[in-house]
Length: 70
Image 1: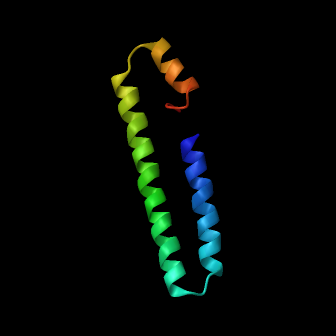
Image 2: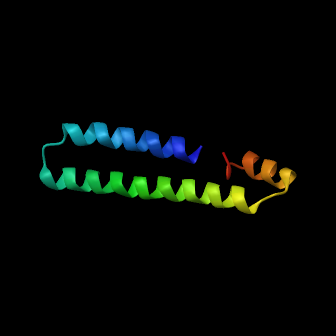
C-alpha cells in the first residue's frame, strides 16, 4: 500500500516537473522525487526484514492486515 502511494506521488511530481520552467522549482521537484525513492527503498527493506524476522504465520497475517507487510 505504501509503495503504491509513493509511486503515485512520484508520477504526479514527474508530470509537474515537466511543465515547470523555473530552474529552482525544477530542482526542488527533482529533489522531492529523489527523497520519495529513498522512502520507497526503505519500505522495501523494512518489508524484507520483517518477512525474514517474523516466522509466526498468525503474526504475519496481522501485520499484513495492518499494512506493514505486502
